[in-house]
Image 1 (cartoon, rainbow, N blue to C red):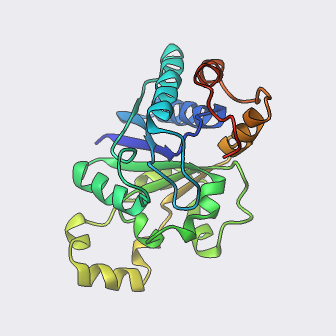
Image 2 (cartoon, one colour):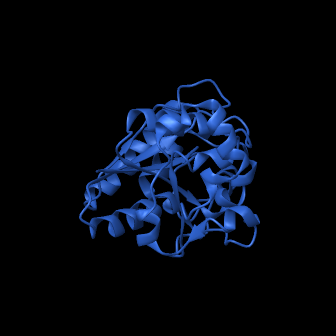
Image 3 (tube, rainbow, N blue to C red):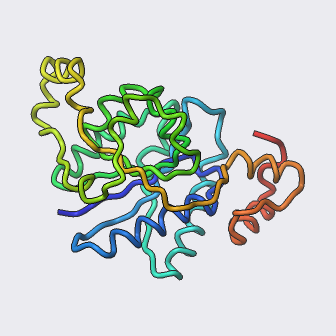
Length: 238
């Protein structure tokens, strides 16, 4: 079995917080006897945010980030299955597709603590964990995470890996799936690993604001900053 790791987001722009999550995931999984692949999964648009920068620029910046990681011995790819879709794109639709494409693999979504805090607002969020597990990093802390999400979290990585998925044939049965969701059985185990490893407390929004003010932001890799300057991105606050 292979572990397929997906780091989703707008990456507008990609920054050190994203790259540190990839490094930490790579370091932990490298110690296990399990093959794995790590992919950035840029979205076409976040339903909770405004219009993102043109996909070509975001993909080019991610390519530069992958080159940086490669020089550090870390291989990461870019999954473009979301970015060319018409917004809004919902994660639940993506994870259903991933379950069809990789039915026998461990499917893990990586996110920051801020995303975890808003998980209960996502479309069909209780169904998400029938298709993927979530590896969340403590960027914003867990204080704002709602109770039913908090109850599904663990800091025991072995327990997190051992928990299985519901069988896909059960999820194809709409009546059964509705019943499972009503009884919360797709969401009743420790499918969320809360990783307290330190990562920079930075967001793409903060970086865009700094760039719009003519500042050079902290936690923005030099190749990404150079690309932004060359293409005159983020001249106004987004």
